[in-house]
Image (cartoon, rainbow, N blue to C red):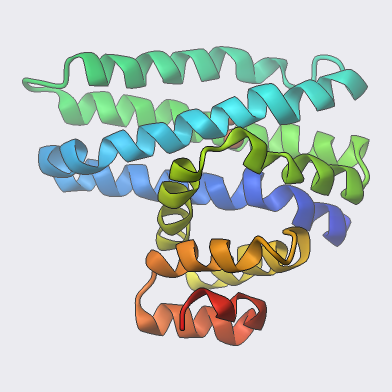
Length: 210
Ligand SMILES: [Fe+2]
Ligand SMILES: [Fe+2]
C-alpha cells in the first residue's frame, strides 16, 4: 500500500495528467481528420510540456537518489516526440488514423511504465514534502498562456472523481493567493453542473467563478 500523502503528491503528474492525455488522444482519433486538425496541436503542446517537466524537473531529482530509475523513459520520449513531429510535418493523405494509433500504442505503453516503475520509485526515494516542493516548481516552467490552455483542458478530460482529487491537491499544495486564478481557469473548462459539483467537494475553489 502506498503512503496516501506521498500518493497525493505524485498523483497529479503521474496519474491524473496521464488520464487526460489518454482520453484526449482517444477522442481525437475517434473524431477523424477534423478533430485532428483542431485539437491535436493542443494535445501535442501539453504532452511536450509534460515530458519536459519530467526531463528537467522530476527525473533528474530522482536520478540523483536512484541512478538508472528513469532510464527506460528516454527512448519512448524520443520516439513519441518523433512521431508527433512527423504528424505535424505531413498529415495529408491516407493512414492518418493508423499513425495516430501507432502514437497511441507507444504513449499508452510509456505512461503505464512510468506509473508502474517511476512513480513508485518517486514515493520510495522522496518524502511527501519533497515531492510537493518539486510540484511547486512546475509553474516556474510554464508560461501563463500554457496554464490558460492546460488547466481547462485537464479538467475537461478527467472524470468528476478525478477533478475532486486534483482540486483537493491544489487547495492544499498551491499558495492561497494563486488558487483563485487556477480555479478560474479550471472553471473555464467545465459547464455549470460540473463546476458546482466540483466546488461542492472542494469549496476552496469557489472563488473561481462568481
Ligand atoms: Fe508522464
Ligand atoms: Fe513521460
